[in-house]
Image (cartoon, rainbow, N blue to C red; front, side, top):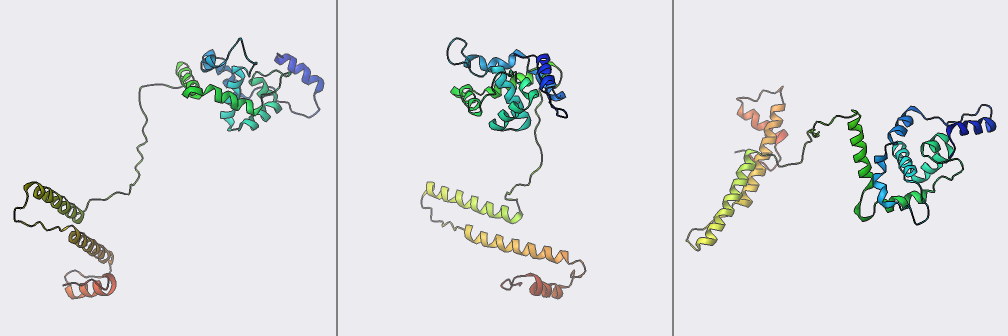
Length: 246
């Protein structure tokens, strides 16, 4: 495998004046490179890679580092392979020698499928090791606390109102009375079902409440204590035509 000194020597001989060749790591990639040197990150791959038989595959370290770049920059498999092939710093980060080809996108897909067989999730295991290492290096602190999003979001619920509670009471009492009658048999007392009529009364009460609210919003009109004027305003501007005030 070519070292960084060998790469510098080659680039000096084939360099183009004015061209920029990025074989050095940016700061964030240098930190990722040091982190991924931890051998614990390769634990999820140990049982999936056979050392003594089969065609040699992409090394586990190379695959892991390519996946890290893919997650960091939000790339597809094809975009990732193109970038690694074009940028010497990324090739060096992925531990791919200059005399070796960059893995094909279909190869990455096959490795991913092989690692996730039998219901396993290699990315979840990698994340577990990542969190543990971050805790060891005091980057994150675990205090056995759970963060909960308590943002208040208005829900489409049935808000309790006086008229609504009365209607619910009528429905519940009627249902219980029918159950009692079914158990006790014919007692000579008829049970009248008021659920339909109470629904109509509730709608009327809600309509009247909305009308009163509209009246109260008319702040420049003094209707307090003037029954005739109040009725005129209700009949003319607020109440529906089929609603009569006794």
